[in-house]
Image (cartoon, rainbow, N blue to C red; front, side, top):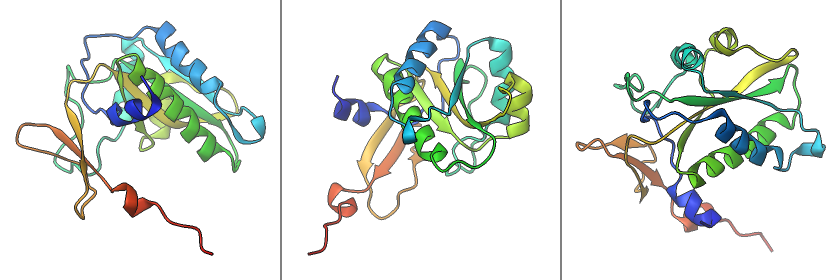
Length: 191
């Protein structure tokens, strides 16, 4: 499967088939893809924590905030929660490369997961203290981004945005993701 097809198929998944686990070995393969990704000055500052144990996952879940545009939805219900996570940790202290490096690494992880048939959701809205208590944190690091992973239990479709870019769910519970047209995001260099 080519990168464009992976990008077209990959959507943020917010409901999973909780009963289907992902092995740590598979998560390590996704992390290995991120390890190979480019990063600022090749500093390789990020650390990755695979989480597959049910006990840890159940302690991580309440720290996460799901789907800001879906105001009447509090997140996945029992049976729809992610069976695995990858927590990306960043070093304490400001380093200008971190947001870009974490974005690149996360993109590699979610595309590797999608290629293997899994869905994912990158989450930056979470309670840091709860994540640290639930899973631990390497010395000198803090949780920067959480990636929820599992087999999707929802259908998501891309559509061309017609003014509003907010994702939404229709009466059939299909998740719609409006995207701007290519000609709306491409700008030309000035002469």
